[in-house]
Length: 402
Ligand SMILES: Cc1ncc(COP(=O)(O)O)c(C=O)c1O
Image 1 (cartoon, rainbow, N blue to C red):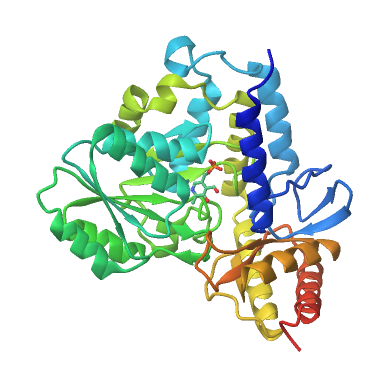
Image 2: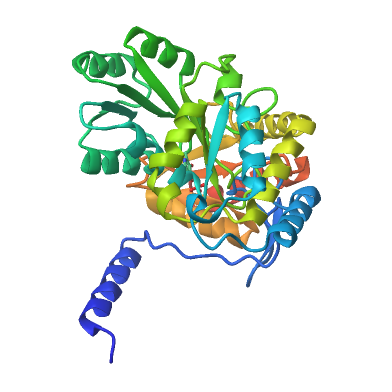
């Protein structure tokens, strides 16, 4: 039996089209653990400015060791979904720890932040309910809402990014809905900006709505002790539902969670389809994520280091003559303008030993293509100085700077 050649040739044409448009993604293979510097196949050592390894925990000895012990203690996995053939005690420990970290009564883990979001919206939004989402929310939120609309027939709307008047209007228009749900990122990943959470919470109170915050880029990052957007604004305990990932600051392996009331977490066990029809987080990953949470709780100075590094880089890149989007997170997008320039610069930077991704249209609006620099607590000042020098050199070479 041969493969269906027409099908596969049509994919070849699709890929060729992506290459012609300059938006084809090439995978860079790493031969060492993630870190401030990695060994990249065919390139040697490069400095990483494009990872979400915010606290440098991906290769933290305690995190790696916990993963090894988790694997030895529990084996590879349960070989089925949790409710059918048991769940490991390490999952419960992890869920207790993340709930404690973000300040909610309970939490439920998933194999990814994507699955956490997907499983959540379809569990809480049904026919007669209304979900309103910030225009710049992450793709996982957008798709979760589309799925809930398709399956459950809830009503949905999108409010202009961070436009609270628009949010209010959309809620007023749905005053008769059974349940109103406001979905927002805590930190917007392409901008590095922070949601106006206190105002959003007030709007929710005014309009009897529920607030759901995706803290994927805020857990371990925002707030004095890295507890996220709510800690940053001093409103811990006031957000109805927090979702996040274990695949960024908290060890960077994989996994995600929904943190909320015990009732909601119980409903996720009952109804959330990724819980009902898909295996749990591998115990080795749960064990290393648990160690990452414990590490963060014991070492809040890492969050401070991250903040200092981000401020240092932001200041240095401004002094070098660039105009990053303003902000206070470790995501520092340097606006380049043309997509081709941003992508070319990111390739040239790799030649200079810096791994930083260029994002262009349609991921970001036309004319705002950017190099998205992400800073880690693992970077040294020398790393950051080197990055600023290399970005400046490359910007001069492409004629973006004198
Ligand atoms: C805001 C946001 N939410 C959710 C996710 C998905 O997380 P995960 O990689 O754990 O699926 C990401 C990952 O990029 C993200 O940035």
